[in-house]
Image (cartoon, helix red, strand yellow):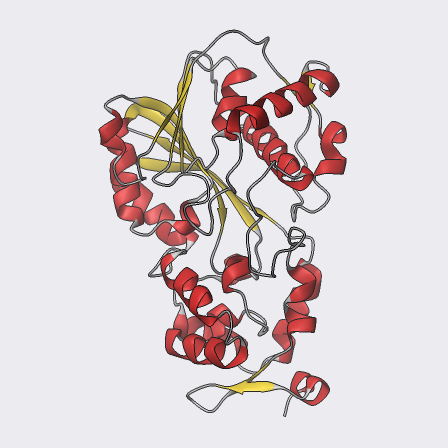
Length: 353
């Protein structure tokens, strides 16, 4: 019996007889973001105004987007942006407001509160005005992480973007379209820049790139902010379990069996999310690059942003005999770098043949 099983006295036996350690207190709870008041561990926030950590998440995403575009020489002047899987639309609305973008569209097949990964029902215009007011009050003409650091304390990130000067505001039009990632042709217009922070919730990546190719200009740029399934919390709050990297070590059949036994009250919604709320079949970053290439999108940058807890979780691998063998059998395209990664920032540029 390995050290983890001896110490924690709890294990799950796989179909092949191998045992893996189980402890929510050691392997799960320390790495989950706190929930909203009066909600359960796997619930989303209830309807109502955005919370401070949600405001911090939005500001960080906008800041990272502008910083990376600047760092890789992507000029937004006069360009048209499409945010695919936009949620509440704050990212494209703020990007439009504080850059020289000409226009921005946010598309999503779901409205607030319609799925477990949707934003809670809230007043989007009010939220936007509050964020704009905050930026105008504290930013002094540029995005600076120090101005909103206190709002981002709960975010699990390590990429702190350098200050980015923003353009003076001018009147521009944002619009929302209830369209999914595979149906961008329905918008009947061409876009220069695509942003997508929801790709791990979308299946059929081939269909996504085909759709972007149809809706993109000849030199379109695509930016994915992507929490890969193969990372430690890649199953997200709703699908993660008390086995380190359990979503990789267990087969689909074993996952169902474990969840029904370990979390009987939550099993139904966990299994539903695991198979229908995340990309399925599972796809790696390498899979994404190969798929993108088929549609003329060439990687400009593939950056892995380490997690804050990476040094702790990396040690868990040593507690599981045959860890890498189990991962490879279940997910042959997942590299070790992706297993140990946190958030990916992936930029593609379209190159016409």
